[in-house]
Length: 401
Image (cartoon, rainbow, N blue to C red; front, side):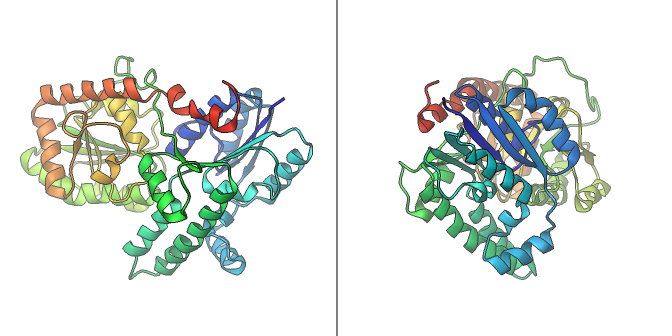
């Protein structure tokens, strides 16, 4: 009988951030195919406890270890061993021992590893199918960081990570039966970098729970009558998100407020850094920190903005906003990989002035904004159901649905 080992760099529950959303729905899809053993990491014990409570009844077995590596130590270890820093940050000797013991028992027939950091736990020899979900081309992200930090101390660190991680990703992809990426753009980039073909590198896109993200669901009201509101949602200790909100607050919002003096900008998401918190001193800027539910903030938005300068894969924040029938203004980088038509389902704008004009257009024409939001939701319902998105897993693993 088939049994699947699912490796995840963060325990999939709760599905409240981009990586966990994808891994949770992947776990659900795999559990429909065969019993699943889960081996995962968590950032802290509270997250581990929540995940154990939810997932233990759903798994054949479950092991979650809390990450304890520090960045300076991980960097030193990576340099000494020639490994990517990313791997050292997600290295757990206890989890490695558990995985080795589990595979040694002989019941595991298939392995699915979620995120490149978990490839280090793959056994050197395994007879069954191995599926590697890289999600994004992480090495390309670090190459961009290196370019951005050319005159900063972190330049060398990011340059090395880009080089070492790219070689590691390609090596793992050659060993795996198939490697998955969240969009065709990411898959094509990896094919060009690794030299592997369509038979080894596939795109399996993200979906959206359109029953949860549904504007018809009754929700609390936020910020009524205080001026038009632009909203950004995301993990606020993640560098691309920090760069995006800093740019919007400093350069774009002032242009919007010249046309709409009461306009506000809400930064909604957990773990805001001190730099993000400091933006609240600017006129019209709100920093919420973690909220129990992003949907009321999306409902309150006259425009949901995604001014990302660096974006890999598909932005779940945009899928959520569009499913909630909200009009979206995104940079070209943020919109890449989303199956939607610019001008019909969302606005795509690059540059501070273009972004400000698009936001003001939505603020100034509520009927047009509502029409765009409805078109966006219809697109999400038609194209982004999770069952359809995860359907290829059965064929890739050779397991009937």
